[in-house]
Length: 236
Length: 256
Image (tube, rainbow over all chains, first blue to last red; front, side):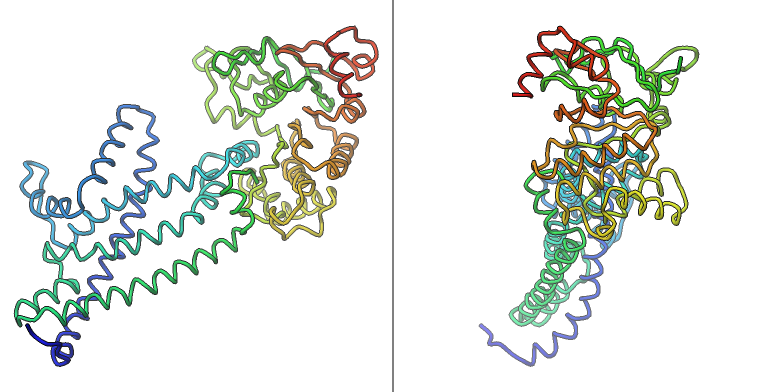
């Protein structure tokens, strides 16, 4: 058993910090991908061909029910071996695809709940004022559907941030990966992994606070009372 | 003979197995004010919702301004109208809802401006001026920058009317617009409708439970009962000279 060594901390810390850019960059890239792909799921589920809709729903369920780690491994190790369509992807890209697609299926559900929260009366009012389909979405429905979903979207951001170290298993050199390598080389895991844990805490806690602020700000703009009556199912 | 602006020809509507409307024939002239009265569940609201294209008739024709609303011609055949066709015809129709349906994320002024601006692509200054005029007309000049949640029910409903009027519809539909209001707020809304009815030359169709008001402003009253127009005529004809027992019973209940 080794004792806590501040010397090790001093040596390991700068190395681990070097991986922070990768960890944060990967989080943002995955999240951006998930936000965008969430919309794509949403529209795919509105395709007016029933068997296709079933297929989409089934695929989403499949993705949600398999561990993200399995999906990562599949994309990184197995996909290049798929005949004809398979090709090699680097670790970073595989992680964006794997985690991004995995979380996009949850994000799609968040979007759906936001849209279903907009009352039927809003659609009817938009129709009575002769809005086009596109205008109905951009001017009336989405501006009301998105703000109430911000806390949920924010939570997924933090959850995703905490899942990103999975990418170290396919060689993406984020903070966990570096700390692990350092531990293996120097036979001391206590300090580097503690540093990693503290870094995650130091980043996810302020994110939670920022999301909270954002939520308040949006709700103020949107108007609290309305949000309240809406969540109770009354019409505006 | 003036051409009617709205005609219903043998219009039926069922929801599942429930037949709500069983053959509606109806002509409304431009500028005519029509009140539809009748027991709840008689299909009053369904009539104007079909006109606003919120419900599709099961059978029959609705003609608006000479155009078949729910059917269009394609290769010489009448087929079900697509959204483009509906949009073209719907532009002449405006509606005020029982539950107001204001856009909660927009100010009062933005609520009025959004459709002329984005749907009709009119200039911003002109739209703003017209919206302000309308809001003044409904007595809400001091609320233009507030949000719907800050208004009373009566005020919300007046905004909803201004919002519909800014689009300059030829036909205005009022769907039980005072039913969701506290009793003390009903009068202010009725006053605005009275003003519109007196000063504007659009056709108006009101579905209402405000019997005295309806009889007062309407050129024509329709009594709807069990999915058919059981009685129609001027207010006087319908109220004083009808022998329809169900109508008398219905009126009696309201007068009691």
